[in-house]
Image (cartoon, rainbow, N blue to C red; front, side):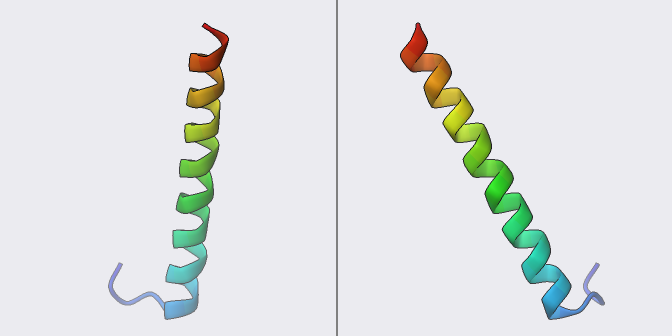
Length: 34
């Protein structure tokens, strides 16, 4: 895992960040509907 290139790490980090945002938005919209 430490051997992967910086570029790959950045891409993976962006994907995780995007997933996190999607989860938060979904969670917030669920709360506001209640």
